[in-house]
Amino acid sequence: MTTLTQQEDVILRVENIHKSYGNVEVLKGVSFSVRKGETKVFIGPSGTGKSTLLRCINQLTIPDKGQIWLHGEEVTHSKKNINFFRQKMGMVFQNFYLFDHLTALRNVEIALIKVKGMKKDAARDKAMEELSRVGMDSFAQHYPSQLSGGQAQRVSIARALAMDPDVMLFDEPTSALDPELIGEVLEVMKDLARGGMTMLVVTHEPMKSCLWRRGQFWKAGVRKNY
Ligand code: ADP
Ligand code: MG
Image (cartoon, rainbow, N blue to C red; front, side, top):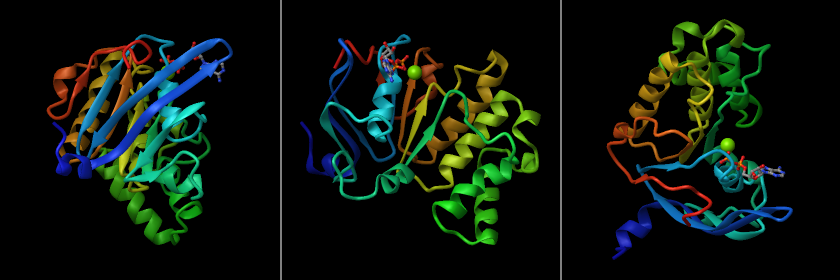
């Protein structure tokens, strides 16, 4: 039975999301909710719609049908600027998407200045704080080409965290990494989960699921099982 408290705790609600590309129905009525401080992991093979689902959640892709709610506010069909919601949903991609011509520090602070309108000094302090949180403060002046994949992914996590998101969306955060670099990224994610961050993680690999102390572990292909 769902209690009122549980409902109030829900940060992200996804309801009956459908998305097709041509004749291929990728998402067939996906529904779930994520409560504050919960980590939900979706596992499914390549091509099952995991990225499409995350893209629908932050409206990089517009679903054909269904609704997304963040803190009880509808994201889909919202009159509010979609950038408002995107700031509240930190996205971490498989391939990091850092700016190659900017240092780690600049990569983290740039959205704080350009999107949040923070003053340079405050943005720098905040960016350093987030780099410390992922253990990358000593690499602040390094360019992405001077970082390992694991380090680059940690910087991209810091960049998402800097926006003070309500929920973090991870799209296969370790699948582009050499095996020996996966652990450092999982450690950062585990710390975030322990610290009460709300997280949605999609992956095609089990990701040492025992890491997830809290929340539900969903062993299901996204496409088939909703
Ligand atoms: P996953 O992330 O689980 O590997 P995706 O969400 O990337 O899966 O893709 C699910 C299916 O949708 C795949 O068959 C893919 O080819 C198709 N697809 C994804 N994005 C597009 C697009 N922009 N145009 C056409 N087909 C797409
Ligand atoms: Mg994908």
